[in-house]
Amino acid sequence: MMRSIVFTLLAALALGACSPGAAAEPAPEPVEVVTTLPVPEVTETREPAALAPTPVTLIGKLTAVATFTQPEVGFAFDYPADWSITALPELPYATVSIYSPAPTPEPGVKTDQDSLPAGVEKLDIVPVNWATYEELIQQRHDEFAGYAYTAEDVTLPSGLTGVLFRVEPKTEGDVAIRVLVTQVNGTPMLVAGLAYEFHYFEAIAFTLRPANP
Image (cartoon, rainbow, N blue to C red; front, side, top):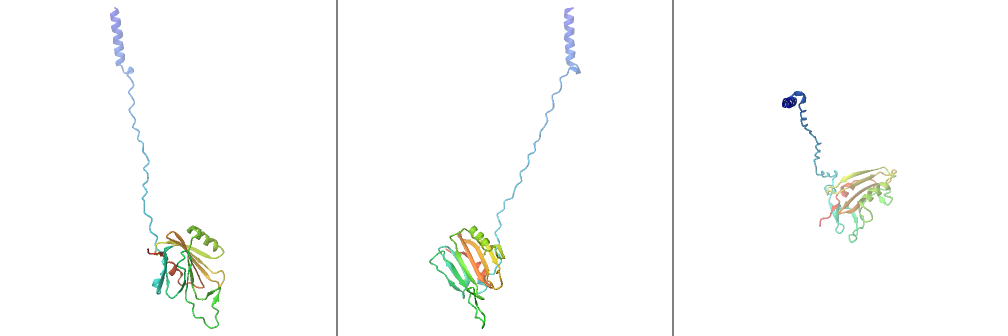
């Protein structure tokens, strides 16, 4: 009798283990996780474009020229061969002044106004050792604050860059002013012009360049 009971219990357990209600829950299926990372933008690197020269007809295409060279500072420029020049080549940072010929005055016409004869253009070419390039530009803005003027970024044919200031006379009969600020071989340069009417300022100033070694 005891054996029958034991067998019956074992059979019941076996059947229970095989019945659907007692089946083990299936393991969850693995979930595939896909992570999408942002693709970094690829920025194309381009070399900066060379600045095109500011359109100016240089003096050599307008008339016969002479050339002044300051070998120690290392700059040169062209000017009309019939202009006068005052220079001290032995002093590297001395101002170089050039003047156009004074026209023959008409009878009864005054030609001396503020020490600059009518019809004459004067240019001073100044290598600077007392201020930086940026300081020279700011000084010109401060100097011309009371005038009507323009300031234009320019590129010379030699590749030098600078700022060209054009200053209008305050009153009729005053001289006009033009100034080019640039730098040659690391030396700041001023080209300052005075005239009642400019004809050749840019044509001369834009010939400024490093001197050939």
